[in-house]
Length: 492
Image: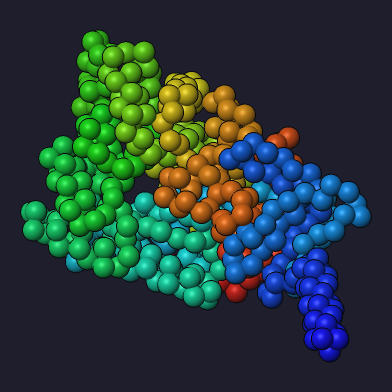
């Protein structure tokens, strides 16, 4: 009996000892292999308008595992294989550009079969240059609403494999448009050819079909129908075809602040506008529509109601309007020292390309156009206040100063810095259907940027980004910029 009790006593001591060791082990932080802890930073999360001082982020396998706040200087932090002290700087989710023509080349004219043809064909070195320069400005995700399908597919493949640094990328293919543009457009002759082209673009990874301004109503309707039947979405840059018509069809995305259909005007304003549009090559419509438009009119009110009700996604690219209206002042808006974001082949001709549509404008034309910019911004604010989903796009081949300017124009429309940064981050994620991007949140993709200044105080603080973390991979901006020198030699 005594032997039995002794055995029980020894067993109890052994169990107690093991339990004590387990409790001690549970109380010790467990180091997660390949994890990285970024700490001692102010975390800015626009989606929740939360500023977290003394914040930290634990990253593993390209995702945010935990997020928290170190309440006291001597408080313990989560264990990690590597720790990075951010020295009280600012962390913001990675920026998203929803209108970036990353694989396009400069607009130029080439001879084909003895005839001059407009071309936008790019080059892999141009693409790589612009991808790196864009990533270096904090844009970690981008959408191209048009581009050469093979070039877009190649970039996406190389970027995903880690061979080409740059934004994560989704895209549409050639625009469907009567005007022939090499590397830019297609115009099938019948429904069977439309189906064939849509299938071809889908096979090369396109997720959207781009419907362009030269199409008729029937062609827009057919393109939207065939794209949806193929399991693709639609993005449209329209002109004479009304946004209302496109929204009623269920077009997924409308782009550019140019809803310039006469159908949205009424009475004498409509008559005057139609008279101005008799010359199809007259680019003055880009501002004159706004001169005639009444945002309180029944057609515009119905449009806004439809867009909000259907949650049609919009990227207005306000910078495009501004560059048209101020085409003779681009060196002031975008001084040459800021334009290293462009490859030299783009830098030497981009201003001239943008001045072409207004070649015959008088000083009075430019003055009238510039007077309409506040009204363009009013349209932005009307859509925003109505709950129409907006996002930030640049309509450029590289984001850089155009992205910052788009944010500043959005702010000038009446948005707070928090609201502008929402559009740049989780707004862009919503635009692209990315449910795990755009926030500093556990479980989300680890895309964020580190800045020395606070963009809540001044949006130009985005120029102070020095570290970009994309899907958990850390890029130093200076190192990215140093890579550009080897990609400047090609000539087009």
